[in-house]
Image (cartoon, rainbow, N blue to C red; front, side, top):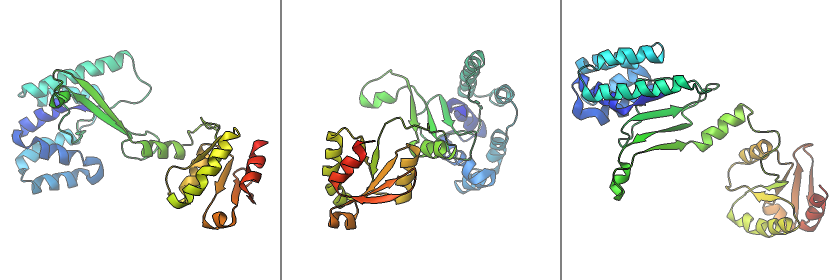
Length: 275
């Protein structure tokens, strides 16, 4: 989905609320979460009059193709120089996309706002077309953001990625490769810092023997760590909790068969070295 901040500025101008752009765009940005009624109510609470809201509503409910939306917008923004400049930029961008169509569906969304004020032109968000999820990527153009750091006259496009959401989407759609991108043979469950201090020496010994091993980076719930191992196609998971540490053992789980066995660190090395 994409829009242009200059278009939004023009819309706010046509509403007669030029000084309230931040208030209006922050509320409009919540359209997917709270719906039209919620956006209108929030704007009323901010003191935006019904006359202004009546001018805004058609843009939030606009339908049709990208070109049809743009033509509607050009007529709506005829009285705004800034708005028409944004419409012209959108026109050129659509032209580029039509000349070399991307595989993904691209929608001109007149309600897309993104609440960050440093954007000056095109803004965009990426969502999954196969499952209901918030944006997994977003960004936009800024003409002089670097100026606040003393580097003036530099334009750019910034993009942020929602790593957790991308992971969740790929996991639910089963888009991870059958074979992991890394050949990790055994994943150690992370129970916390205290247990990790006992795991590190075992990890080092395994790696010294050429056995690809890793410790999950955070002490999150067991289910998530096991899901990570499955998604990466890691064949073994090792557990060194308080009980194993006390007995000087490691519990090794075969992720394929589901069987478990307890081994000394030395026996663990021998067990995995033959794989």
